[in-house]
Structure formats: structure tokens, C-alpha cells
Image (cartoon, rainbow, N blue to C red):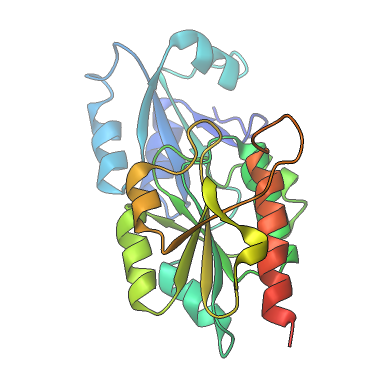
Length: 246
């Protein structure tokens, strides 16, 4: 049996096998701890297609399958298709590229909110890593209020390498970081990519070191940080304002 009621989860060995054989994009494969040996073929097929494999317990699989016979395996399918990195640059056309990079943002509500704001601010696309990141789940799609249908998302294996490629294409990389230059003092005109870090640790070290400039949002109260989607909204609209100011 299959179940699409819980964030588009497909469960059961047969249905998951057919999913992995199809062209439908899959976020990740969940396997029950202790059953890796009997699920070897499915795990190998997922890895062959670059699909992350995660271990979990039987109770979690019971929950995701609504009590169905999951046989120790489930997979989450994407709510929208990913595109290639080059597609984001092509979409910019004659305009200076305006991209957003999500560095291991794991909360789907945060990712959905960022997609919604990025699309509204005129960004040409979003880049997410394949691992340790929320993907294009139904929760992300719902939180984006449909923006996921309009903002292309590229999923890459290595963010630092992707950032280096973008820099070689003339795109200036701005990383959101509390120790950066106040954003009001930054000229965001020209080709730009804004990097937003994960909810817990912020920008990863290699990603942070790959940025051309770190930018911050001044804090005037007792709190020293903002939710990543809120911070992203402030910075995205400042970039949009600078790009449209003549």
C-alpha cells in the first residue's frame, strides 16, 4: 500500500522499489534500524540515484505510514521538481542574477517561508544541499503559499563548491552572519547570492569562509538573533531595493 496523506510518504518494499525505479523525484529513503541487510537492494538503488538514506525506528515508520504495513521502509517524494543550477542562471536572462542559498535549513516551515519571500522579492532561484536540509515536501509547498511553483530550486551535492562556481560566474556571495557588516552599509547591486544559515549553528565554516562578505542585521533589543526566515526577508528585500534603486 501507499500513503500520500502524511507529507507524501510512500511505504512498503514494493511501492518504494517502483518509486525508486521511476522518474519521480524523491527526497529521502527511510529504513528501519536492524533491517538494513534485507533492504540492501533498495538502499543501493537509492544511493545510485543520489537519494539520501536515513535510519529510523519502527515507531516512527508506524507513525508515517498511519499504521500501515511499511515493511521497514518508506520514502518521501518531492512536492515539486528540482532544476539544475544552470537553469537558475539562465532564468536571470539579461538581469544580474539574484539567488538565495539555504545552508542546511532543516525546518520545512522556515524553508517554505524563505521560498515565498524570495519569489516575492524577485529572486531568480534557490539553492539547497542534498543532505542535512529540508527538501521540497508538502509542508514546504504549503508554507510557501504556492511560491514553490514559481521559484525554481536547485539541489546540489556540495555548497562550497557551488559557491565557488557562482563566484567564477561573477556573482558576489553575501553570507548572513551576526558578526558581519551591517546590511544598511552594503551595496547589494549587481549579481548577488544571499546565503542563509541553519537554525541552530548558522553558516557552516566552509560556507562562511567561501562568502565574499558577511552581512548582519543590527539588534536593538535584548535578543541577539532572528528566526532565519525573518532575517532572510529583511535582507532579501534590502537586496531587491538596492537592485531597483536608480
